[in-house]
Image (cartoon, rainbow, N blue to C red; front, side, top):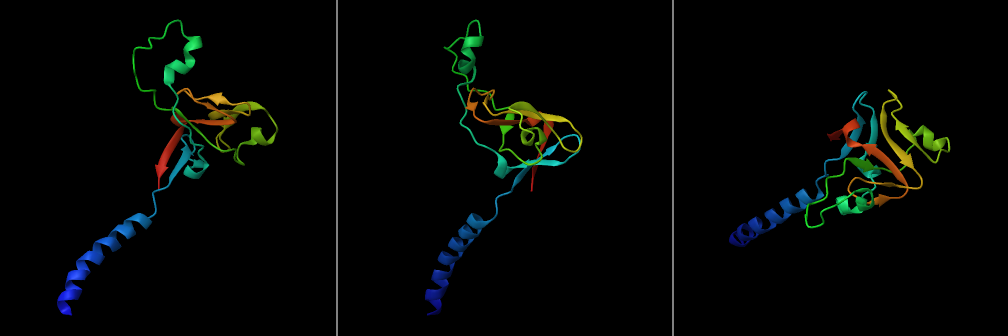
Length: 140
């Protein structure tokens, strides 16, 4: 019996370790205002979107776009979030307006109920856009 239990022990131990790593909490991401460090959004508030075709989506605005270049679209410079309580202009009933931090009044982005186009080319409707360069991304 001692040999049977010693042989089965290594088999059960790696599976126990793999379940521990599967259930380990994923580090959460929160976004803070760069100026005053107030929390403005978390990972749960982000509205995911598929990356568009980049410059091809803006072809109507360009004089000539070389379609032979198969470049990967640029990384999104903004994040889109759900409407939140701190967005005062949303609560006041505006259709589209700037989004300001509640603490320091820094401009963090903008919103439009009719939607906006991300710099990757995807159209988001309704759009509550926060610029990444105005935010600090913190992992907890």
